[in-house]
Image (cartoon, rainbow, N blue to C red):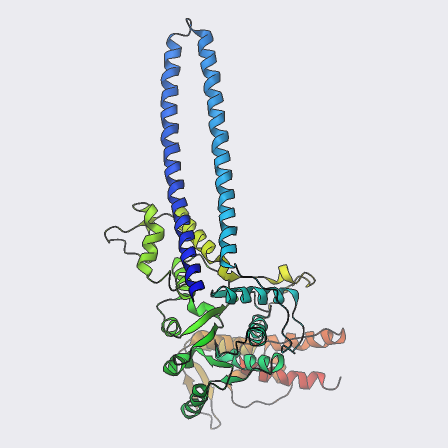
Length: 480
């Protein structure tokens, strides 16, 4: 804990230095501007005087002009050198800042308990980076592009801590409900030696699981965002060794209930997983800094004042500030981007992001082909009815009824996929393909793709479409 406090104190020093450099740069620019104005004014006076006495001191005037040009060249060269030195010192300061944050380094190897396969080189680099966060008492954001294995890298970290650091937890992982089964499956596949408790289900089931959590006979607890807020009292009891938040963009709003709830959990280390890069938004950056460095960034008003004070009285109000308040700082677009770049620099030691094109060199470039399909006659008729705020249906007796919809856009999406999404029962015959333009096109494309040994993945956000799409495959492709 002492080492962590020292790191935070050193970090404060670096942040203060960043802010001092901004102020010094503004002061230097202002001084250069005044000096340039004075030189120009002086040069104008001398030129006028020389014009009046041009016949008397012609040779002296030529020497004066040459001297002035030489001085101007020297000033310009000096200014360029200063700018280059300033840029170099800033880059050097950034490297020193990163090195200071990751002082303790350790050679990493894949844990023997990680039995699901061999990690790729970039995944080993991610494991090494997360272990450096652990060794230096820091929190971090793993922001790899989707598909690079953030889940596997996290499991590898927990397995490494148990095998080499005698740290068997407890660890808390909060993930969306849709990815919770995948987390449990990956733990069983890659590291079955870690005991995982999945906190979900009804109230009685969760109460029994809470008793198991209190006994402490587990390594990892998996739960969802909603249940983390519902069970906040029970989850606040353990002292979590690692708190992992999947889909970490949920933490970008510091005023959300989830952010406030999770910030109250006691955790030695915090790790956010997200597939999206940092945005140029002061409120989001503040929220992330508050979660990762709560001892430094603990007050939003101090944060705004601290970073915007050098620019007071200029441009536009600070994002989130009070434009009518006394002493409010104002920023133009250039100054706001300067602050955001500084915040990105502050976050650099705590953020790791890789994209597929950089780490998977052998992966071919993705090609997209957009095929536009016309609606069938049936789809066009129903589409028009829905646009007219109602769908006329005929029951078995022959009565005509009109149904209204609250979410018209969703209904239009459904009819664009297939009209059978509006009926409970339908016959599996040739009409199933003919009544939907997308399905008719798919019926033509699939046999050709499969004939040439292509692999095909059919994806839809609507589960009903998946059920309907399985029927044409049975009709057309079963004989072959």
